[in-house]
Amino acid sequence: MTPTLVRNQPGADASAPADAGTRARDWAEIQERMLAPLYEAVYDRMEVGAATRMLSLGCGSGLAMLVAAARGAHVTGVDSDRERLALARTRLLPDVGWDDAPAHSPHPARRRARLLQDGDPAPAGADGSPYNLITVFEPIGCAAGDSEGLVPALRSAVPLAVRGATVVLTGWGPPERCATAAVLQVAARLADTARPPRTEPGRWRPTLRDDLEDVAARAGLKPDGSGRVSCPFGYADVGSAVRGLLSTGLFDAAVRATDRSQVEKEVAEALHPYQREDGTVWMPNVFRYLVCVT
Image (cartoon, rainbow, N blue to C red):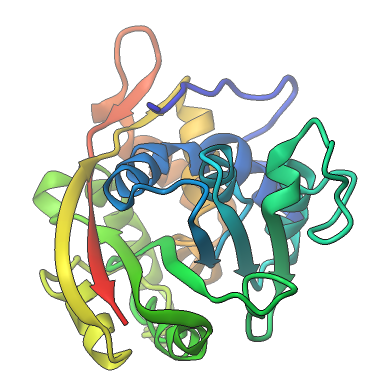
């Protein structure tokens, strides 16, 4: 699966205020699919299929879960973002839930999906069966403090998995391999304009080589391999690119330090080197994943 160029919705205004619902839709409709090659590469390596009981931490609007369910996996997703989780439910559970889906349902993915907001995840099934794969597809490594909540979440999830279960962590690749890093630097520069200067979590920082290994060590996980995946960010135009990038949350500190219209303007300017003659935007990126065992 490769990224699809997404056109602006009719009448959409990239400078319009973004409420939680709009931001979640921008993530689901524009940005989330940019990581589809990462999902596919991990699932290929883990041989995800009917025997897989997967727990997705930070599942967002559910695309990674949908891909796994289409391969036959039983999937459970946990996320604290109410709006993104609502979109995941629309994708995975539009009519029925985990336990009451009829066996003859024409949508088999719906019989194998469960979504939870906040709190600790439950076992993988009503029979208490444990998970054998835990995934974290929200990439870490380019924002200050972006892994702080992940370590306790992993510690809570691991007891629900079989002994020796696989845990996959994901992160941004080296800045020199990620064209988007140059655009994300706008977030750091604008955040620094706050007076007094802010060092709050969420501020952009360069990815470090051992970000994933550090999380694994703090969570008591044993690394067992890694990989890199090309995930180019492709957009139909600059407006779509701005909306998609701002939906990630990586520019939130910059918005608080200045204002949304200023951030949108400067992000659009930073995207010009990546705009092609037909108006599309294309930024090559590399993402990394770390395979661990419990």
